[in-house]
Length: 350
Image (cartoon, rainbow, N blue to C red):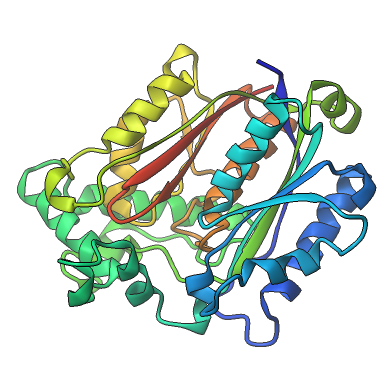
């Protein structure tokens, strides 16, 4: 296996609505900042891979327009995944492992404010028996939360603790959309949004983008004083049918964590992409995180949720802690699909 590292990261501010910029205009300054900070040009990049969703843009092949932000010259070897940019990073990592690239640009972007995101996400469900009922994403998550509460897996106070922690951590993140110093009793007094979920239990709807530079060993040492080496990365998908899955745990995260080697060393920092508080608890348990781990120092997905970029941002935020010496070992997580259907785990070390 070749050594591969994350050497640069940039992101846009997560905003509820970007009324004056299209997706390409959101992405252009992010990629420009990435190149500037890394001191590279287009000519230095061997491979470009992006993550986005045509369903958010409402048109087929919408991802092609995202390439306008990269530039039309020189010609590049390019690919795209209809998923979060974290899975684009996985493809780029494979490309470097195979010797087809030494330096890869990975980005993800999304502008869900153009439509009704919770209803759009219903298109991920079984197209014959579930999707025609158009259950929105929050209602599906609420059914899972109700199951966890009735089975005693979590309590509403546990969920509120997660929200309080992440919102407080987000106060140190200039890109976060939701942040603040709240008490558990204060947010438990809020009304239900979709019972048993309150507003603070749900990630916000965010427009945004992020980008990462991935490099092979020699290029990484040239571009970064302390590269964040990828020591393990894996993604596992569970069945689409919610009825055949154990929704009280995230089995795919458990398997991905085992294959990525999360438990082989102390985890200083974990950046998790769970979009609901009860799901963040399930991911923490699936990863086996303890009190010695700082979870979501950026605020995580509950503080800013630029769909199709939020998972990639978790890898970037974890890498940032390795670069500045805050962490010697960090774990990043990304998810896709209803009720944590598919999960990616990435282990980074300094």
